[in-house]
Amino acid sequence: RRHMRQLGLDLAGELRRERPSWALEGSHSELCSALVQFKARKVQKVDAFETLRSIHDALRCRGMLQVTTEELEAYSKAAPVVGAKSWSREAVRWILQELGVDGAVAAEPSNQPLRLLDVGSSFGSFIGVIGVDCVALDLAPAHPQVWQADFLQLSIEDGLTAGMQSEGHRLLALASGSFDAVVLSLVLSFLPTPTLRREMLDRCRRCLRDGGSLLVVEKTALAAAGQAGAAERAAFQK
Image (tube, rainbow, N blue to C red; front, side, top):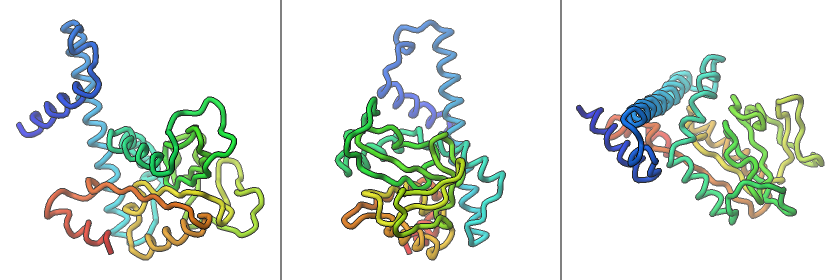
């Protein structure tokens, strides 16, 4: 009963936001088909969250950033589903507003784009945005323009005049102090120890120009609700 109530609330929210034509004008068969598709999307989102949660739990148990091939494949499929949720899109809009970028998709590149490093990008939220020159990387990219790289192992070099070094789809090195902004969205919570999170932040700082911006987005929903997730949230704050 609780599941059906939540499903009904989610459907009501989607109807308010999207106002789909089938809700008012569709036939009975169209209505039934739309409801089946809605439920399938809801199940897919729940499964994606559970996939990410299980990978997080496995990393915390190992105490190191050691991800299996199967986990990377599952992560690359789940991350775009999570990224399509409304709160994720709102996070992208907030980041662009903070950086003074309008967030439209570019038909032509800007003359003086803001140089942005998107660590743990997965599906490339900032690729093709007007006013942004985005370098996006991920352990398991879900977009053809996202570089494959482990940021904690990536070489950050002084005097790298090209700005970056790559080989095929792999990113090998970045120039230090070459970015106006670095984005970490649902990245720090993926790291199993405070030491690794500190190292991640230190590396981001090395990539930033003087006066650059580091924008961090996290989602408490990745921890269990209420008291069950209190210890996990407290550990992340350390």
